[in-house]
Image 1 (cartoon, rainbow, N blue to C red):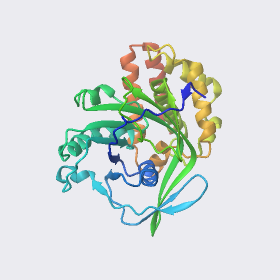
Image 2 (image 1 turned 135 degrees about the vertical axis):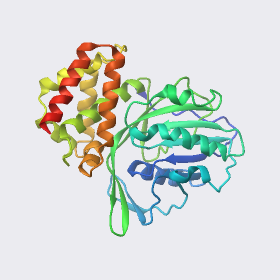
Image 3 (image 1 turned 60 degrees about the horizontal axis):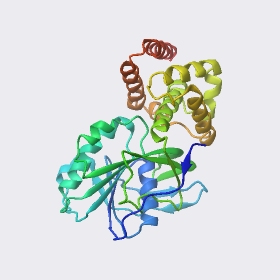
Length: 328
């Protein structure tokens, strides 16, 4: 699909037992934590979450096989500055699984965990969230010697269902993740990502994929709106010519000439094909009264438009959003 190679960097030969912190207790965060607990059973694993589950957690994989996730190491994000536990690790891996509009809050979580760690630890920050990340904000918040960043793009679907007696977390489709590095690769890494279940593919073009994924998520939310329709049902809602216009105008927002209309169209079609039976997270949240995701994507698009200084693209997207708002 994209230029990739299946190789994850490795830790140095000296074994380092990391502290693993999953930030976000939604569907992806819980499913990912479950895989980490299986593939790295001796790890010190914690989940930072706004809500602490008080029901049995059931995990359903893409083959419909269910297993119980008996996990107790939750940290209440509202009480992050009152952690009782002291950590003792030289390497901390943070897996960011928050909604895109909440990602910047993870800076404080990372700082607090390091505050309660007895060593000056190396930090690995892995972003799994949707949206376009402000990497400068993160890089300016930490010393260059303290951290490095991996960006991962999720081409899979996950859903969290609150039942009366349990919480069901499903991998509804796909197991593919693309990943790449912000800055140089690092020789310190090895067992960071759970690779026995998921397929991780290295991509030099990870930040192109990030921008393409952003547009795909935005279009699904914008056109499907607050209806519970599957991803493939977007096609009757928007004309091919309109999509082509969108791909072109979005491409000229960026100085990177490799972000072409053809690339955006190809990614969009492939992403829909691989997740065609999913319900996109923006519409799902919107249907349940949460408009923060769509507000984030529209605000970020407006920000990208203004930063581009391209009046043609800016006017196009203002008109598109205005037309969609008036039709809702």
